[in-house]
Image (cartoon, rainbow, N blue to C red; front, side, top):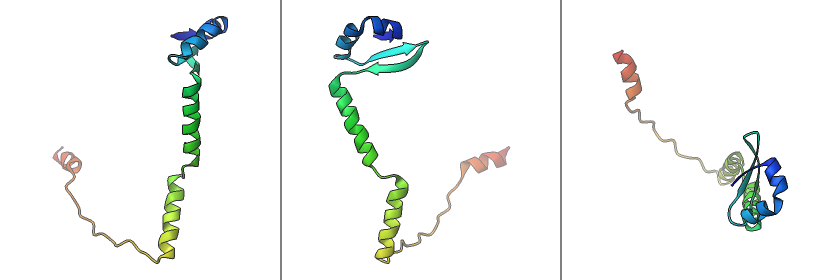
Length: 95
């Protein structure tokens, strides 16, 4: 069910019972301002959020990779570039 803020205030116990089965969205002037979910769903969200905070940013991962490569004196082999046709360029030339 979609709730307006005033309805949610007046029917808090009904809102909480409904949230036990599925998330309840609360709107103010047609903009979502809140969602009420059951405690298990919220616990899952908190667990996911903590996991995301522990993840390293790609820049940190690449910095660690560069450090490891430098320690091991490893260099990536240079791979020769192979050009391929570009149909976009051909379409421009046709016009």
